[in-house]
Image (tube, rainbow, N blue to C red; front, side):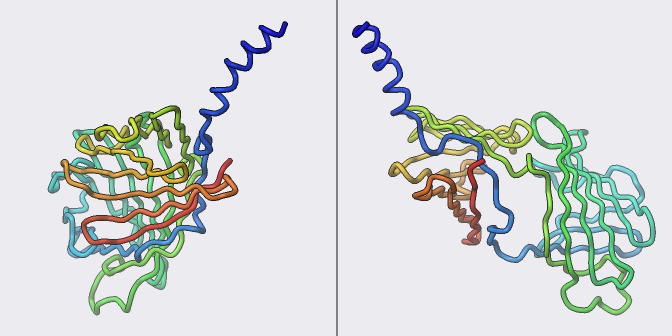
Amino acid sequence: MRLMILMLALLTGPAQAATSPFNGTWLTDIASIKQPPDIAMLTFERGIFGRGREKLDFAVRADGHVHAVPADEYVDAVAVRLLSPRHLRETDLLKGKVVYVITFSVSADGRAMTEQVTDYSKPDAKPIATIVKRKRIARPTPGASWLSGRWLSTEVATTRSHLTDHLRLVGNRFSRSGPGGSGFDAVIGGPPVPVRGDAPSTRTAVTMPNAHNIIERLYADKKLAMTITMTLQPDGKSIKTVAKRQSDGSVFAWTLRRQ
């Protein structure tokens, strides 16, 4: 009997010791998100719709037909249709497959807009819905359309599954599994690995400087694009996350809460 107890102790002891406090299901706390202002620039003039940030990413005729746009690894064609005087639908495609559908709805006074986004880009291709509410920045240009202008995000709502991540650290392997089968499986200190559900050139590498911090370095086209630092809090119930975008130094922060 004593031998049996010793064998059980040897089997269960290391497994318990190897269990990381990072392991588990974590939910992004939307209220905790801190980021630079999210401003969308939209134009709709003479039947031509355009969208971008600091400058237009594309401009196509809103005739419901598919038009090629400057390609990246996320979208290479767009179809736009005017649904009503204040409603417009944009369908984004990649290699002939629908990846996003966005419907813009502007209020009667032209000051507020609701942006409904349906994401089909995840590995399982199941739709993920997000609603973004925006307000117009400054007054519209005289003679401009109801949609044209710069719009600031004021509120975001999405599904619980869209905000959920499953983290697992076993030995020197760390994995993240997110909505729709997105995620990765990497060796701590190892080479960058592909990210499921992201662009083909996207890679991530993971390091762990101590027991409470995991750092992800996200690469696009072999260039460092973003550094994400996750810090486990003393109570083990939350993870403070800070991401820094390399292109402009922008910093994003949010909290993951254990479920």
